[in-house]
Image 1 (tube, rainbow, N blue to C red):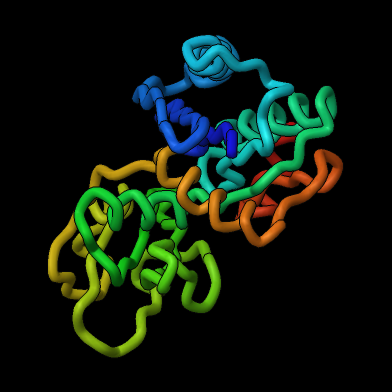
Image 2 (image 1 turned 90 degrees about the horizontal axis):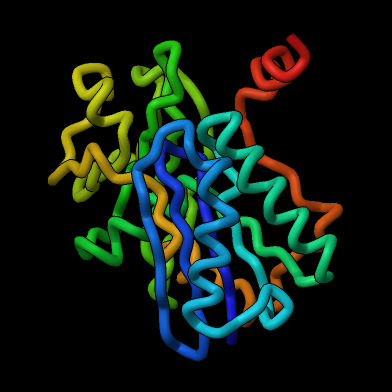
Length: 224
């Protein structure tokens, strides 16, 4: 199994490669440099494993929500590679990637992800770890003011994501612990994509669409 994964929805350019059970990755916090770095970094990872894009079984990408420009970069790169090679795509929520990363690194299994969405709002979602060792979404992903974030009324949750650093006093929950700096990581996207690949859950290039959540703002920004 050979899967390339990447995410540029935050300030990071995160890329990972699974090739015959070996994972290699780069994760660079490079605000506003993702468009310049993503293709050279992909080439470098593939070259180091003596692979070409056409050797891949699938390409997984962070579909958002997150930075409008960053989400478009990842989606456009995924589409371009897939149109050229007909390799299937596996879109992965960038919020799920944050939760999966915290589970893999910290062992946290009940996670409330809140990512700073600017203008006083957060992208957020609640996740629990399922039997396959991957996070599972409870309810739906949303964008709202921090005060409007919802969580099941039971204890034992962990807070993850940049929204906890920006709006801690406004998020109305007590968490067991916080990781307020965690960003989406491509290694976590690989874990989620691997399960989807085994269940034949992929799409074609023409069906790859970014997830903004704040659609009206995205349209206004794109046409101004």
